[in-house]
Length: 230
Image (tube, rainbow, N blue to C red; front, side, top):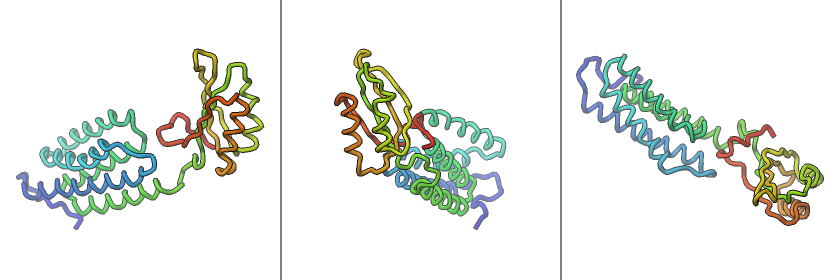
């Protein structure tokens, strides 16, 4: 069951090649479903899911067409180098999913379909468990807070008592001017003591900043630059 479906001869086996690509497509579809499930809260791009489904079959096809060990090494080196272009706007989770799909495609291209299936199942289970549980999530319960203040308000002291009353942790991440320099927009990461007190917390901030805008939102995966060890 752990042997390759291809013989050791140099002749290309069309039938087994089609089986390998078809298996890679099936595994790719399962990888796509896994990623969709793990990102059901923050959402995902349809184009990225399509890429995850197609990548294993493409890699398997490249390996089938190449043949020699040296060429395989060179082709896979170039393929993995292409991940750099996808990794720039993506997260580490996205990059891991891409590498996962490429590894499954490589195993299918070499004919190890049974191993590819076991490998895909094992990694998918681990991926889902880590993604859907609080494991390694230092930002559980952390929210992103944006408070607009007039330029004559000493924001470093004005909100201190409010934060002490309603939050466990608070950290000022960014301050920028807005409205032609007449106001400040402060960005904090906060962890509330009681989520049921959210409205009271916002109302208390509004009484201090002159009823200017206060925005309290979830800190999702796209806010990598605001990561903190709260």
